[in-house]
Amino acid sequence: MLRLGACTWIYEAPLEEALARIAAAGCDGVELLGEPEMWTPDAVRRLLARTGLAPVALTASCKVPQTRRDLAHPDPAIRAEAVAYLVGCLRFAAAIGAPVVQMLPSGESRLAPISTREQEWRWSDRHRAAQPL
Image (cartoon, rainbow, N blue to C red; front, side):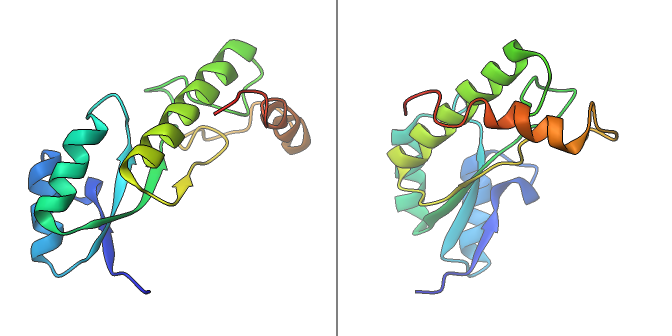
């Protein structure tokens, strides 16, 4: 089934208002911002039911320097924070029924690499399957 959806963060509005606008635009799906501490799964499910929107994806965000979410950082503590955040996003997505979670492995706004591409991939691979969901 093909769904027409939009991202909630295209509107600078509270989630309830953003979902209402997306539904009013004729969409039947929504991509939610991956910030599980902002809402409870129950609250999001109620809003989705009220608007008739289906959760099609959740996007985890690694905005650097605003967060320390960077799976390809040389500091193991920063990588661990990124993994914990991503696990939280996966749990939240499962709780609301979002079938897809997407995330870039390093800081979205990092303008220059910290190391070589190969080294950054090695750093990001260290956490693959290291933490149970």
